[in-house]
Amino acid sequence: MKLQQLRYLVEVARSGLNVSEAAEILFTSQPGISKQIKMLEDELGVVVFERSGKRLTAVTEPGRRVLDIAGRVLQEVANIKRVSEEYAGGDSGSLVIATTHTQARYALPAVVTRFIERYPKIRLSMHQGNPTQVAEWTLKGEADIAIATESLDRYPQLVMLPCYQWGHSIVAPDGHPILKDTEVTLAALSRWPLITYDPAFAGRSLINRAFERAELTPNIVLAAIDADVIKTYVNLGLGLGIIAGMAYDPARDQGLQARDVSPLFGLNTTRIGLRRGTYLRRFEYDFIELFASHLSKRAVDMAMEGTGADDAYQL
Image (tube, rainbow, N blue to C red; front, side, top):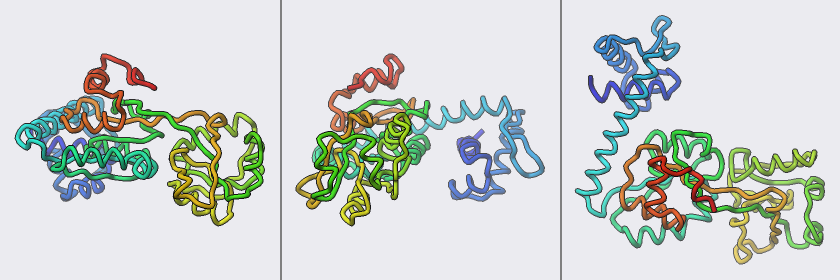
């Protein structure tokens, strides 16, 4: 039995039994993967994947158990490497953050600046994507820490650490009639064309549910993945923007005004996601605490060990 064979098993399962896709991800050949998987099955005396001709069609019952154990074995091998890097490399190494545009643009710059000052030898990189991609990158080990608002709680393989709460604001051009309203209501918003986030991003699910509860249909004329695009089109007069409150800066966003509408849509919780069972290096603990000061090493360890609920540190 070889580690490479276990990697092949796990990646084929992740790729929906598509051997060609797994081969592309692992930079190897489809026949090579098929041969190694068959050799491992013969050694184990267990069929992991059901087949129809040369095509894999399902995971067998014993195959599910093998895959579960193989995943843990590969994670522990990765943990050994992380331990050696931490103790042999001193303050050097790499840290990959997977996050969304909103977090990267508005929540992380100050944290990243302080982290780099503290750990100048750490190679810090950032993968930006939608929340589903952020979670998947972390689960696959392509990122160390996930930071997002939507979707992370749908992945039981991730330990969830609530960081902070935020609400939405509307942005409108100077002089827009809605800015004169004493109170902005959902009914008032539904009378205007709206520009807001793509359904996978930045609390859009709360926006949708608020209108549904009020039995109103919003006139969303444009959806985007980041607030900068939304504000650009609001400036062009195409509609009112609904954005994360943190994304509005009166000094930077001249020509636009903002109104807090968090009571209409409720509060969103931004979370850090960590793959269960991962060995965390000292600088990872420090990055987490820089981002959310209540997430001390002890708090993170309790969540990772399952001795406290993931929401135990909810603000």
